[in-house]
Each structure stands twice: as C-alpha cells, then as structure tokens.
Image (cartoon, rainbow, N blue to C red; front, top):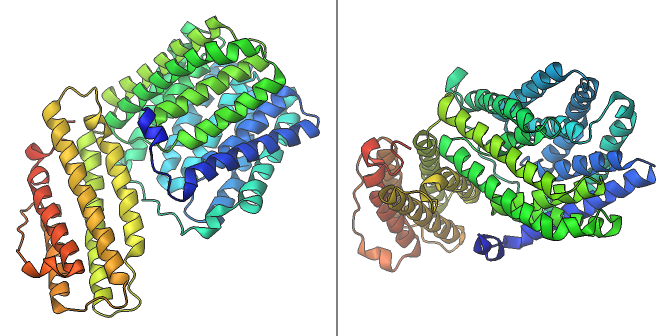
Length: 496
C-alpha cells in the first residue's frame, strides 16, 4: 500500500498539480465564504461544494468540464432544499434520501457528467444531515454553494487550467444494455437496497450519525461495476477508515478544534485525498476519515466514542453494500471483465488497422488516440480483475491466471505503443510485409473475440525491422491470450 502511493508514476506531475490546485481552490472558496460573513456551517458547506466541483468533474474536454461544473448547483440546491425541509419528517427524509441514492447511481449511464451530478446530489443531501441543516439556514447555504462552486471554477478554468495543454482525456463509455441488462440499472437497484439496509441498521446503531452508514454504502458503489469490485472496495474503505481513526486519535484529538492548526491539517488532508485517489482507495479513505475528525473537532464534538461510532457505521455501510451485490441482481466479475477485455482487444484491432493505413502512406491516419483509449480500457480491466489478484484471494490458481492475462494485455499495449511510435516516423518503411503483418494481428484479434485459436507465423525479418518486431510481438501475446480466453471454463475469471 505504501509503495502504490510513494512509488506510483505521476507522468507530467498530473496528480501533484491536481492535488495542489484542489487545495488552492478549496482554501479560496472557504476564504470567500468567510469574507461573505458565513457561519462555520456555511463555510463547511462551501468547502465541500468546492471539493466536489474539483474532484468529481471528469469530462473529456475542458468545455465539457465547465458545463458540468455550471450544472452542479442546479442539481444540488433542490436536493439541499428537500433535505432541509424534511429535517423534522424522518420517514419522508429517509425515503427521499434513498431516492437520491438510486437516481444518483442510475445517472451514471450518461457518462462522466451523469456521474458527477449524481455524486453532487448525494453529497448535498449528506452534508445537510452532517450539519443538521434546517430551512432557516437555506439562504446562507445557497450562497455558500454558489460562491464556492464559482470560486472553484475560477481556479480550475481561469487561474490554473493545465488541462488546456493536454490532449482531451479518453473516457470509455459505460457498458450498454437495456432494462435489467444494463449494469447501471442493476447497480441503482443494488445501491438503493444496500443504502436502505445501512439506513435502518445505522439508525439502530445511532440516531444521530446514521447517515455515515449510508455514505459508506454509496461511496463503495462509486466507480465499481461487478460484485468483486464492490467487495474489494468495501474492504479497502473499512481498512482506510480504521487507519484514519487511529490517526485521528493521534492527530485530530490533541488539536481540540484549534482553528489555525485545524485549517493547516485540513489542507494537508485535502491534498492527500486528491493525490492518492487515483492510486489507492485505502489511502484516500484514510485522509477522508482524518478530515472528518478535524471537522468534528471544529464543531466541538470530537471524542474517542465518536470515532468508534464512525467505524461501526462504516462497517454497517460496507455490510449493506456486500449484501446488496451478493443478493440483489448480482453482476459477476467474469461477465464485466470479459466485456472490458473484449473492448480492449477491439481497440487493439482498430489501432493496428489505423497503423496499417499510416504505414501504407495515408497521412491523415492517426493511431495515437487509439493508444490513449487502449490505456483507459486496460485500466478498467485492471479494476475489474482486482478482486482476483487481491492478496487475500485464497484461489491461488485463478489469481495466477488473472495475473498472466494482465501481463499479456500489458505486453499488447507495449507493442502497440512501440508500433505507433515507429509508424509516426516519416522515414518508416512502407514494406508490403507490414500490411500483411497488420492483417495477421487483426485476424488474431477477430479469432480471440470469436472464441477461436490464434497461430503465430514466424518471420525472421522481424529481428531487423522495428515495426515488424512490434507486430510479431503482438501476435505472440494474442496467441498466448487465446488459452485463458478461449472458453469460459478456461477463463481465469470463470465463476467469479
């Protein structure tokens, strides 16, 4: 876990810039709320709104990100109104909260924008419970949300928009389907059921902090698709919470809510959340838990009992998520991972075809965007396979096969990257052998996706021709992939 954070590559220092900009944006948003005369409740609401605006908006283009950011208040303010208005009506409040959970997960079918708006809606309702917001506080909370989102947008799109110098991000479309065949529909039902369990049991554990359990269930479902992914994420959330609570006892408790020290430590937690989110969910939850402890210290209610209660409610939320994905319309790891692998292989096919056109002399052919798409698809494959390669997975044979599949897919990606670099060279050979080798790779992909075998044709010239060497390497990797992917019984993921 330590290695994943401190040794993980950060090309272009993207994670560092992402985290540093977040601290700047959130600090400025809280400062603006303070200058506007808002209370601590307004400042906390504004800080969370800025955090979400900087964290959850992941559209492929800067323009798309700006549009989504502008839509956040349009979704969040009505939810905030409902949460505050139903403060004294527990049954209606709880049913509305579950409706927000279901709608927020269902919205993921519309890609990154739907995901961002769903998260913002849920967290707006959540923070209303956290702060016990009532209708008389709504004008201040409205202003805090609007000012903070505007400030965060000013930092992100004006002061420090480093994305303008980067190529547009490639965001794979979510799995398709209709009705219950659509993963987002099944997940919306699962999340609502899990949140319902967490809400009821969480209230039995604590009538004041029950929303922690619902929040744990919600965040376990974020960025997961299959049963295995959700269970692993639940374990990591619980582990991060345990470590965060231990740190809270050592760090947050001695502070006693001192505003200056708390502000500095909160900024460090924000940096930690943003910097570690992409590489370790456990580390991210550690920082989230410590930040929550610091905020409760500011509110004057932090103590060992409260931290123990947070752990208990997190456990309830994790149990709710686990029961939901196991018992309610389960989505197996095998089916999800197989779908992502198929998409990755088709992307290899498309990249090879585009490279063949480039090597044949078509100047407009550009396989580079396909390489970026392949990297994103392989990231989704790794996420799906994570339950099988987890250290606690007792099925050693399946773990070895899953790691072998990942290694072969990484080999494919490496050969594709090398091939694209060679093809981009204006002096690259336009030898007819290259076209033939590209066609063999495309045929190999078609055979794999159709469940057939792949054979490798030896080519001695590959040793001296770089493009042919990469194509031959692709052939070998695809041929080895045929064994675990050919039949369900041979799949490293079968039955998961």
